[in-house]
Amino acid sequence: MKSPKNRYERRTRYVFGGASNFWFLFVAIGVFVWLSPLFLEQEGAEVRTMVISGVALLLGLSLRFTYYGIQINRKRRSIREFISILGYKSGEWKTLPDLKKLRLSAATSTTQNIPNGISPTMRRTITVYSIALFSAEATPDYVIHTESKKEAMKVAKALANVLGLQVEDNL
Image 1 (cartoon, one colour):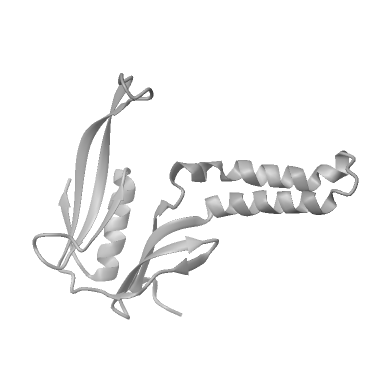
Image 2 (cartoon, one colour):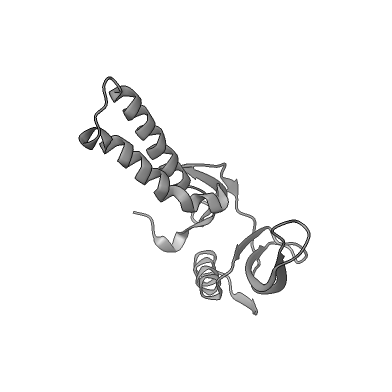
């Protein structure tokens, strides 16, 4: 069994973005269509019903369980950015560079919502926390973003533990 201190894995974002929030709707439709012969009379439509419910279930589960992520294996000195499709992870393992620094920083910006393309309706301020891994001084080799300070601290500590680095906190 591998030690959890030698490995790190994290989902970074969903492939389908905000549309992944509708996964439950497709699953509910699939289940409803699948069960519909129990309470609706249909003649000769069993195959069509099963195909439609199967497609809806597969689409819903794909929306929910398809995401991007990052994995680090310190023991093998390797890293990969992957895509997980219904639990199957695909991505090329690369040699982990000799990382020297782990920096936690935050950037705050103001965004506007322009629903009609002309007039802005409201502004909001968002803070994005970045966990950057450096092998050289100038540019980071890998960056993980999150909008939660608590999650950023947790990710930074987990990465520092796995990689044996100190967290440079620039919050």
